[in-house]
Amino acid sequence: KAGVTQTPRYLIKTRGQQVTLSCSPISGHRSVSWYQQTPGQGLQFLFEYFSETQRNKGNFPGRFSGRQFSNSRSEMNVSTLELGDSALYLCASNSGGNTGELFFGEGSRLTVL
Amino acid sequence: AQSVSQHNHHVILSEAASLELGCNYSYGGTVNLFWYVQYPGQHLQLLLKYFSGDPLVKGIKGFEAEFIKSKFSFNLRKPSVQWSDTAEYFCAVKKANAGGTSYGKLTFGQGTILTVHP
Image (tube, rainbow over all chains, first blue to last red; front, side, top):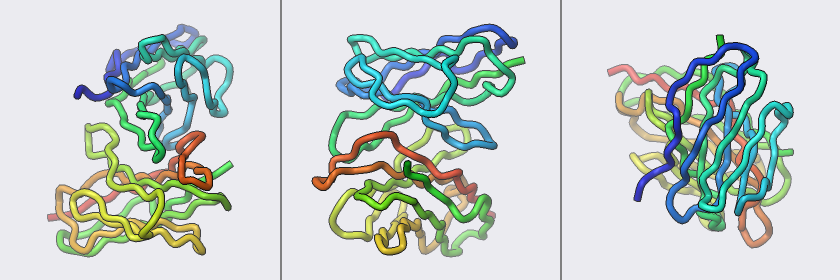
């Protein structure tokens, strides 16, 4: 069974640009969560999608948005990039089972110059 | 909202030493608890999880953790570490209902970097 796949793995943008990151969950998983990982803040929850609906949202500004498609694939978008948005963005999928275990992808490393 | 506190930012040990990483959470209700590990250059992987039953849970690679509800703690232990255990370790908590089904976001601690010298 393939794991969680994130694309692109690395990208460099400049301030003011926007970026879209993609995540394909494990086959059969309907829940997708996004996290931002930085050395200073650790793992911060962005949002969770389940069956194309945003189920939970973290404390990030409206520049951060996401969506989920009918095949459970998810995208997140960051508009008007700031230097502080440089981070590793992690996607995780969940089967929807009782224990809430998340399976993580390798992440998309965004550098904002 | 729940929060997770990991006591140590960086732990340095020699091979064969015993390990205990502290984790406390703040939420008065039922929880599911997790320890994840991130080896250098790799993705986050689940080490072990607790959702009900025996508070002492065993995970992969000889790790175990004990859930002490009265102390809101879920400390990670290993009797004898190896060089290959060098990694960053994250404790995480998720709310659960009375039946043990988790809901809401998974909240992580700040992480503990473990360095094991051969």
